[in-house]
Image 1 (tube, helix red, strand yellow):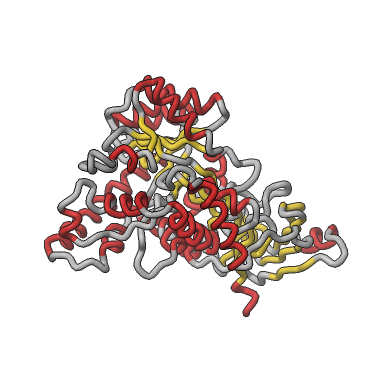
Image 2: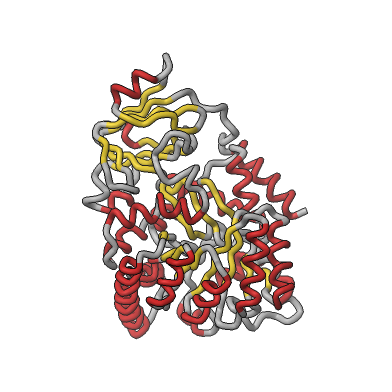
Length: 451
């Protein structure tokens, strides 16, 4: 019944917002000063892209592409802008918007910054949560993130319901790979719950790992909601046998497995079980990076913790001077860990992507603007700009298994395109100021049109 109500209310929202499904757009010719290919770093200048039926039909010089365009084609001239493939956030949480609580609240709870916001999300109506997710999804799209992988904290089926509403044209948002409930051990996120209610609360958000058979069953329960990926949170208490059962069950249904693993032990468990991607990987060793490279396992770097983000989201809170000082010291240590991680990853040759892990309320920014803070952070900890671009386009598309659909501006792929005014290779912060967004041939935003 809850799932039916969620679908119904999303349908009502689309009528109120005039976002009903549209007929396929007419053929469109996009002219632009520069077209950047993140895979190679090559630039075509000037360039043109012909779009038909939501997909890219041809890419080349304006003269050649225009000659092949059908009569009456609609033309969008972006002037001297730089055009790129739509951006991919490979690790996000669209149905969670945690406001950091007051300092006394933090100190009185296990996982004090995160748990109060997560509990509030769980106990509030699922429909309210999905509607919030619809807003955050649109904000991500408006900032150029045309594809996202939503990795948990969405209730039982909130992200799949949101994905379906977007796919059917009822609301506006990015392409979503939904993971459903996160598979995790008891107590990893929430502790000290009311014993009479704990089970009911937890099952709204998590599926438990309890032996190999239980792990398989958890995957099957998620597959009932047509998920695109399985998300597992692995601490040091999950066995290789349990993790292997999850991977085998998911792979038997052609579904990839993304594993939250931060410690050396949990990372090794994910590697030994044959996971498809390791999320975070904070303590990954050089030997583990070699193993990941040999097995083709992706590392999904989540950089928001490495660039002063933690202090930013705490700014609205009245905190003691000692707490502020501790946060500043923590930011400096985290930044150094980020520098060290990036250098080891680049040296290892392991495949990697970059995801935001965004689930936080960022004062003064939309969700999309908050997500885009990953770009200057990655640059500040030593990743070259072209590598950053690949990590949110071509490499991310491969990690998702969608390299035949998104990630590059090529004939046959979805017409998911973004444009910025300047050169993102020279200044990666240009990606914080996306001014043109097209998804599936539909223009989402075009700030160039007013100039």
